[in-house]
Image (cartoon, rainbow, N blue to C red):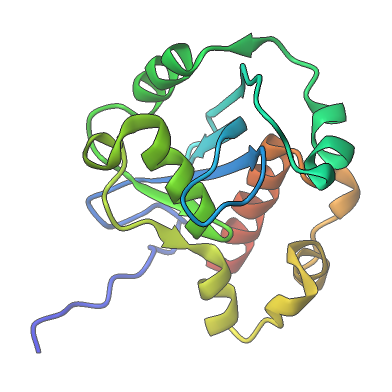
Length: 177
């Protein structure tokens, strides 16, 4: 077998050739054939952040109307503007995208850019699966797991893309040390 197991170095820097960008999105609803982004957050390993709220005039699920829409108070950008800002932020290196439960996030990215034009490497990393492999009870939700590793969850707003991404990255960083 020629596969090499790659690990993070002791100082927390990534020793693989591709950087990681942590991502979370909030959606109009969850659909089997894709979803529409209402907001998106990206955070680089360095801590640099991008948060966007997208223009959207379509229908939203009842849960989204009650729990997500009230938090979307920032300026809205068009899909075209969002794509440009994301491309500028991500750059040309095709980094790995890390998402807590990546299936819907990946579909949203593919929907925004087109399947063959996403700015990330084509194999997204599912953080939830990583947590499961480390023995976490993923049925409890990320907030409970964060408490278990000593993160004060009062610093984060649940179901807000930027705070959800910050929490995921903070958990990632804790697990690397």
